[in-house]
Structure formats: structure tokens, C-alpha cells
Length: 105
Length: 459
Image 1 (tube, chains in turn cyan, brown):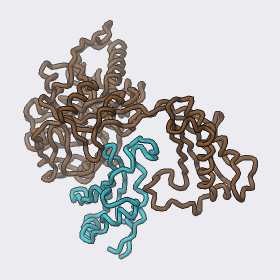
Image 2 (cartoon, rainbow over the protein chains, first blue to last red):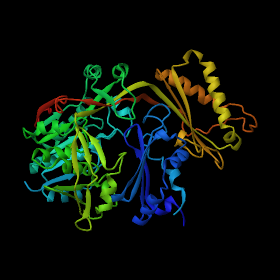
Image 3 (spheres, chains in turn purple, brown):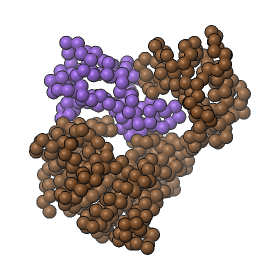
Image 4 (cartoon, rainbow over the protein chains, first blue to last red):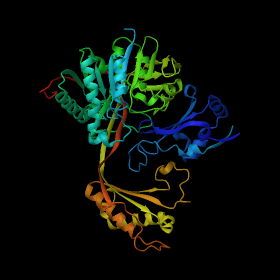
């Protein structure tokens, strides 16, 4: 079944985790979708690199968190929060590219 | 004591709460009213400049209700990261608000004021002794960064609070503190499990954000027992569910199961979230793992100059297509005209409608389909006058810049304001985000005792 990530999740959000990291929370609508997404490994380092145009060393972690039926992705911020060139001090609007991801699940 | 009850009025002091929720919390007879007042989220300016990111009137409103309730009912009131960033200037700001409340409400109490400022000499000495390391992925610290910082604070753990609590103050007003510490210190002092107390504190510091629907401006109630704790919202329109509470542990953290803090980490790998009712959640299994060496997080900010910005819109389709050529041309003109300022300024063009929000992370940095662009011209320079010069010259050059295919020869930009250029004041960047090893976790945080009474200035 072909689905967009937005259609099988309740929450997709981004936020600073301290001034040097950006963290994304992807919370699935059901445990079944969460388990299928984890089993299929749909959110992987290469995809994150491609989506955000970053090298693999900037992907700091991709973790499944069953109690919240969620997957968490953490990347290095392109800049320390508030440095010259900052575009999003809180990091709260960096999640949008995840919404349109399409998977066969 | 079998059950320790905590009222958390709001996610950040000044974010507000409904009076009905607060009163429902008081009716449950809490042993502690505590609030976290700070964050590094709003960026380096507030720490660097020594000002609060929360509004004075809003902070006074929340604090007055908390202090009145606490003093009348003999419930300790604990405030951490006062003034937002928790440096001495922020603490003084919050203390002045307390003094005003004391006068107006005719209150009388004893207050412990705990400082979190670190002198540059103290940090430099620790750096030379090899007791400071970057909090990955922050860069290594060097002495110049320390000297350039306008303010450095350390994030205190529970120990400075526990030390102050030994003398039973009515109120504790603390500088920069680990968010859960204001909630966890008193129960840990009474012998409750640190893992459970800190995990409860971690949830309560965001008040009703962990409920559904969530809110940063509503109260939350926590009850700590020997082997578990419960959390419940005080507004009947909200509920805590095992999912909403578990999901909250993800918030703003890179790893939801291992949460590092002062002196160790919270391990939530075995944590269980269970429903007690349709709106109360029971949590157990949270463990605190002490670190081999106690570390305190240092935060610092340093000034990098002054900023002037100009906001403009572009609607002309030819100008939109030519935007990169125009920006490059304007940059070159500015560099040529003010060659003597080379190296003393940064000139940036944020192009909203293309990649203004995501910058280098934007996966589709094209102009396809954009029928208008928002432009933010930003100049940061050594002085405000230089920033004005660079921003103003870039703006006027861009307004009349000729590019191939141009039809609109009267002007390229739509300005919403006169004046078109705005002062953003001093600009700061974070300079420290490092761990400091200490032998005495409470040692660096000086505690002052203050008698607050009507007619006395809380000093």
C-alpha cells in the first residue's frame, strides 16, 4: 500500500535539542503503522541525507521509541542556534519535507 | 511521607494559567509549588544581553498568584532559571518583581536566592585544568571565547536547592537550573527515589504540554510515591494518557530513553506508562544513573556586533526570476562602495518563498510557482552605524538595481514600513555549551538569604 508519511502519523515536528542539534519526532497513528514502518526501515540515514542535503556524519541518530509509537531523527544543526545566517532559532519549521514522503508499506 | 504532591502551574513562568486550574491544584494540598522560568530556545540574545524573553507583567501575574498561595498555605515555592536565562541580571530582574509583589500583597517570608553566574576567571582556570569539555557536537572551548562572553551561567542540579532547603526557606529563587531540579530537589531531600523524582520533574516542567490537548499555559499535578508517580491535568478539558505522557519524553531531546543532566542521566528504558483512569497516568521504572564525574552544563553568549534589518516584498515575475543575479550584484556594489569596511560586516539576504525558512536544509530551493517573495536584508557589523550603512546601502541599491529583462524601472521592492530599516540592536551568538567537572555540585552556586517583608526591599 502506498502511503504518505503525513497520512499514517499524528505528529511530525522538529525542534532544537540544545543549540547544536535539531530533532524530529514522527508519531504514528497506530501501533500497526509504527511497527510496519520500523520493520520496513523506511526512515534511514540515506533518506535523511537526501531530504536535508546533509552528509551521513550529520545524522546523529534514528531511533524507534515504542512507548510513543514514534521514530526520532536527530541531525546536526547547519548552524548553532542564533549564529549569523540563522533562519529558524527554535528549529520548529524544519519538518515539512518529511510530510510528503511516500512509502510502500 | 508516603505521597509527595507537586503543583506545576505553567510551562514557563509568565506563560500564564487559568485560575480555576490553579485553585483545583491547591485543593489537592500540594507539598510544593514549583516552576521553571527558562530556556535556551529563544536563542543567545537573552543570555548575552541579560534580559528576559518573558514579559514582566506576565511574570508578575503568575508569580503573585504562586507566592500568595504558597505563603498563605505554607507551601514552599521554588522558581528555577529566573528571568529566562538565569544569570545574575535575570535573577535581579525577577527579584525586583518579587519585591513589588511583597509590597503590593503585604506578604512576609524568607527567601533563598541561588546564583548561577560563573566568572570568566573561574571558567578559564577550569579550562586550563582540563575540567571542561564540549557538549557534543559543540566545538572545543578556547580562552578567547570565554573572555569574549558577556555572561556565563552554569545549570545547577538538585544539590544547591537541597542545601538551601535544609534551612526551610518559604521561597527559593534560583538562577539557571536543570529544568526538573525545581520539582525534584525537595522530594529527593525527603528520601524519594531520584530517578522517579527527576522524571516527574521532567514532565512537570512543561506543565500541561504532556496532556491532550496539550498546553504550555495550564497547570499539571504530580504525585510521587515510593515506586511510581502519577500525573494529571487540573483542567477537566484535558487528559493525560500513557501515549501523551510517553510522547512528551521525546520533546526537545535527542534520545527519549537516556536523558543526561547534572551528575548523571535519567534512564527510561524500563519506564512504564499506564492509565490509572481516563485522565491520570502512572509511571514507574525510571532510573537515575549517577555519572562517574559530576558535570554541570555551562552556557555562555558573546556579542558579535549590531544588526540592522530591512523587510521588503517582490511581486514582479522578472525580478523574482532574476533574484540571485540581483543579490550578487547588490553584494558586489556594497563591497565596492565600502571597501574599507571589508571584514567588519556580514550582509545576508533571506529569500522567503524559496529557502528563507530552511536555508541549506531546503530540499526544493527553487522559484517555481513563486508569485511573490519576501526579502529580509540583514546587516551585522561592528557598530550600529556601520550596520545601518551596509543595510541601507544594500536596500537602496536593490530598490533601483537594473537587471536583464527588467520592465519595472521605478523600483524593485515593496516596503511595508517607513522607515524601511529597523534596528535589531546588539547581536549575540552562543559561545559556551560545555560541561564542567566539579567536585562539589552545590559549591559554585552561592546562596543568599533574604527576608522579604512589607517595607523592606527583599534585600
